[in-house]
Image (tube, rainbow, N blue to C red; front, side, top):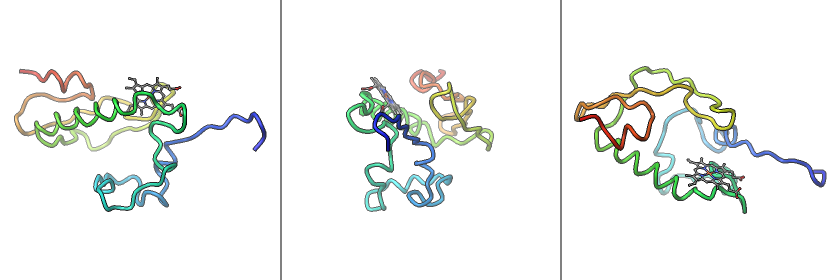
Length: 124
Ligand code: HEM
């Protein structure tokens, strides 16, 4: 590599590499169970790497876990529409291109739209 060259990491294709994640498009949370083959250091890079790694990584991780557990308390959400359009959002990051409506069965309370606020403040 040339000195001064600009190098970009691409987490999206890295996280879909079938050599690292067999059937990468399949939703298989059990991949992350202890004892399952784990990705190596440079194969899971949602927060970047090295000295400029995301400063909020631990906070973000806690926030995601808290939000998920609040959602699960209300029952396992199911997709209202089976298709989720996934792609570049804001020209920076990847994610659902539109709100993802889900239904929950216990108790019947509201439709989440992907907003964290909706989870923290469920409709009465
Ligand atoms: C799921 C949520 C998040 C993801 C996926 C994420 C991802 C990233 C990535 C990929 C970088 C670039 C790292 C690099 O250059 O190698 C970054 C940088 C950064 N993130 Fe996050 N981030 C998240 C949430 C947050 C939160 C909640 C905060 C603050 C409370 C935060 C603060 C920062 C800061 C300050 C930087 C710049 C670090 C630097 O340049 O030294 N991030 N983040």
